[in-house]
Amino acid sequence: MKRSVLTRYRVMAYVTAVMLLVLCTCMVFKYGFDTGEDLTLVVSQIHGVLYIIYLVFAFDLGSKARWPFGKLLWVLVAGTIPTAAFFVERKVTREVEPLVSGAEPAPAQV
Image 1 (tube, rainbow, N blue to C red):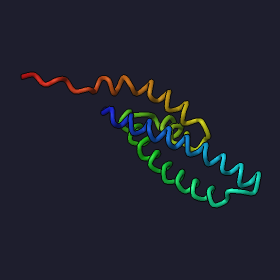
Image 2 (tube, rainbow, N blue to C red):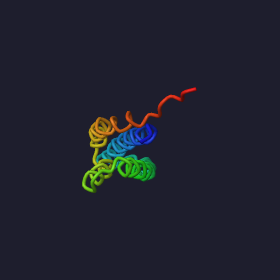
Image 3 (spheres, helix red, strand yellow):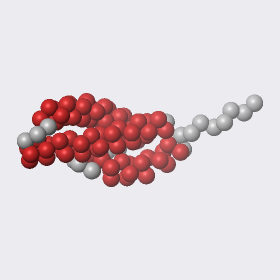
Image 4 (cartoon, rainbow, N blue to C red):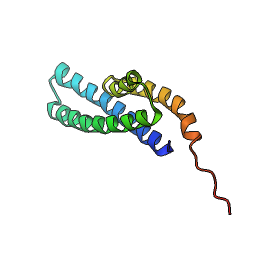
């Protein structure tokens, strides 16, 4: 497995998690203080697009790492639970890192 597969997943996990926290904050202001309705709409749409990209990258990583369906589902759902993506990303990185390290190409011999 290439390192870029893991890197793409990690970047999108963090971006998705941060945007979900921003969205939750916007929702508190929208429903708790009756302000920021337009901002909440924009942030929710941005998070939705980023979450779709996260799903693609997580599915790609899971299929290359040959995860069972339950684990893959948990990683995919982690982008919808505030702060879960941070913890799941760390665990996934620890588990997938040996697969990436073993796949590094050998240096060319002349």
